[in-house]
Amino acid sequence: MTSTLKCRVLCSVALGAALTASAAAEGIDGVYRVEGHSPGSGETYKGEAQIKKTGDTYTVVWRIGESGHVGTGILRGNVLSIFFQPLDRRAAPGIASFLITNDKVTEGTWTVLGGNSVGVERWVPDRGL
Image 1 (tube, rainbow, N blue to C red):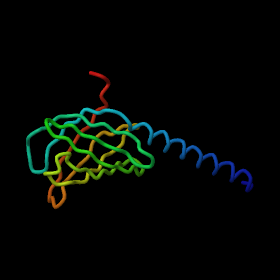
Image 2 (cartoon, helix red, strand yellow):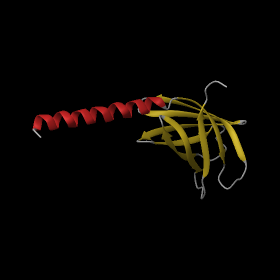
Image 3 (cartoon, one colour):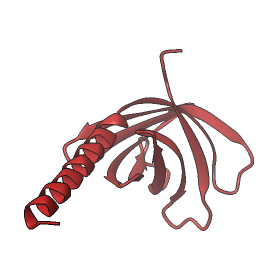
């Protein structure tokens, strides 16, 4: 293979990967229905979360029952990692890690500062119920 052909192939692959990553990053914005279990709890909670791209990061806002949380996330590959803080500031902050599938947040785990177990959440894009 000539060096010119190698360059064209490698440049095409790199451009395709960059476009795919860009499309995936923009695709996670939106409103999601959320269902989960708190660490160590068998009780299910429900609510909604909204994600908005803010530069190189994402702002995430949860509304679960009467409470709310706000967080800042970073996307790396197909994982969105989020630091979050309860809006009332009385509860502990935490960290969450979510899997991205088909350009949407699908499921993840989370814990609070000092926690020794994790909770789980499943996210479904809200299509205007």
